[in-house]
Length: 205
Image (cartoon, one colour):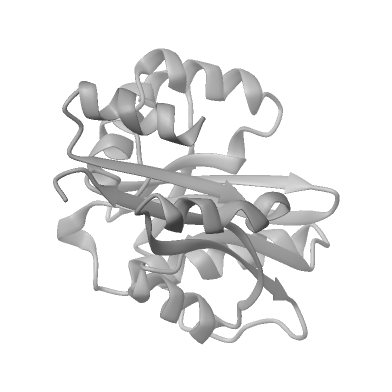
């Protein structure tokens, strides 16, 4: 089956093939290597257990506003710009954002827009599953990165989850995203398990 998939990609003039496998079938990765695939990165689930409340200097200029019909266009634009060029990232449409609203009905505060001094600069998407707070997505516009905004947003999420008596948080990060990995570790997240492994095959070779 893998050989057939490679042949189809070759006929379609693909430059590179990317594929991932989840943890329950890691044993088949040897077949990928046999067909010329190279390991690129892991998708890692990191876990944070609250031992004591974090102490930090709050930035009052950073505000989170929930997703609503009136700011759907802004959310879509920010999402697509923030994740442009990111690994495994796709784009969304306004229809997708409307679906998000339906999925998050009665939990609208779990997704929305990040503002700095009333300027929209990013998006966030959270989830609450079995008393675990999941930080699904944080997207910050490139020109606003490297200023500690992501850290401030994470602190806000942690505080909000603690206020709901949710003391365990998880997130998914690519091992190749060194900056994000270091930030999460610095805050107190620890590697929990490898969710999936990702491989690529250069079709020019």
